[in-house]
Length: 198
Image (tube, rainbow, N blue to C red):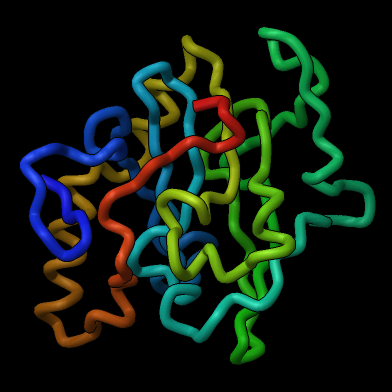
């Protein structure tokens, strides 16, 4: 079921129909710095912010910087052809961007999965608030293409959606989470279409 305009729809959303969700939690030992990898039925992966990530509770995102080192800017990623020639190669620990919140706090967001960088969400440069408002759809971070023979092994190192839901319930029961810090927003019905590639 999905929510449309405040009404429950009997139809599943695009996210529910075509994507499986996997999670990496407490990245680099930063409490609640969780990210989500949405795996499309064609095996391509979309990297997003997960509901517990502090970005969703630390005020509006005011800046997204894809210059991750002196020599590497994710915006310089130039991909061509079916084999995605020219794509930057990523490891799960590869930074995708640095994010600054209105509170002044900064966070680095990571690939979470090994593969080729197909694209980063360039709209975040001019509209960084999409990370807060629509983290699973228009506010996605990047699209990554894992090697077909490596994708299952890579995803096995991440938490399943069912396990993450249990974690969120425990987090809420413990009194550490509320609607704000668990990333509640109006985005329950996604129309995912990063760059037309997914």
